[in-house]
Image (cartoon, rainbow over all chains, first blue to last red; front, side, top):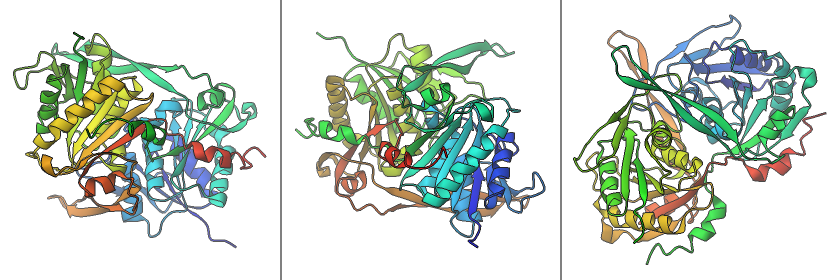
Length: 258
Length: 258
């Protein structure tokens, strides 16, 4: 019998969020699980790391079943760095991040702490997947995602991933029977149009809340937004080589050295 | 005579850093400048945005010459969102971010607040450039960068940038005469190997500092790391479509829906 795979689990909603507890319980069915996750919510922290502040790491035991579970005072990316460089004795076979409470499709991938943790694992050479459910509710129903998550995780463990590629998986808010399947997609060209909600403090000073509206102008049927709107789970391969290779030839025609 | 271009300036080292003051003074020679930058250092904040906390915006006047200068309590990306949605009357013709005190070449692009601000401007459809100098010193000598920055900024104002492309420009720590020129590059495949420096608080609790060593295993002579080591200014076109398009065909052969 093959050795159980070692699976690192993290997220950005914090270690006690129902999303990560579901992900942990699915991963326990297929491997040895180590959890290193933020001690408090870290949504929209992107690929931030903590270099100008101290970090704390605590051994915890949230549901009484795991031997190796740690909460960290830093960002999701800090958690992955801690796991790989300080906690784990060997490189994990898989890193899963999530299940995020809310979408990380389209441009959200770039703001997402959940996806940045998965990307960091990818940079470290670990096959990695971020999972997100299109439901921001703390009490969202994660049950319909279980079988699909297991299937995708087992496939990645079996096949591996191309070098420098991470998976971004988003689930529509649907019952399991209403989900049409998994669709490999590209990131839709969408963006947020922000509105700042201006208020007064009790001491009469102006302050703001960042709010915004998601605008998708990309009509492509090969996008994650299309898939999710049409009842599919979207699976986008993501890379951390940010080079716009297609632009290099054109830039080389510029007269920058004359 | 053509109207002066409107130029938004930001950074991640904070509004009073010598790097941004140099960038402002170069931009004042070519356009109307508006500054919106963090009120404190925000290095390595990546693409973080502030959604669970309040934001403050203050009109300031650091060097007594600019009419429109604002400090913001948020991240570099928050600054760009504030500028575009709350402060500026029209879309700027250019956004420049930096000059960063320290390198943003190779994988650093993904952790960098300076580059994330430029990327955010790119998402908003604004031609954008991040500038960084390979010198972390607060009193680094930014003078050798001036002529090159002006040249690149004027070229972008003249030619525009392809849709979805931002420029990541890094300067070697050299005197102007020793700089060999500007080289269009790809992002080197390099990474940080972290070491956590473990200490005790005065109250006997363990805490950590994140430290690390930069490791470049990419020997390509078309990379930013090669250019910088060989006396060139590196210019990498960066994109925010993170889709690994080359991996889609392979993933479509997976039996995810059986």
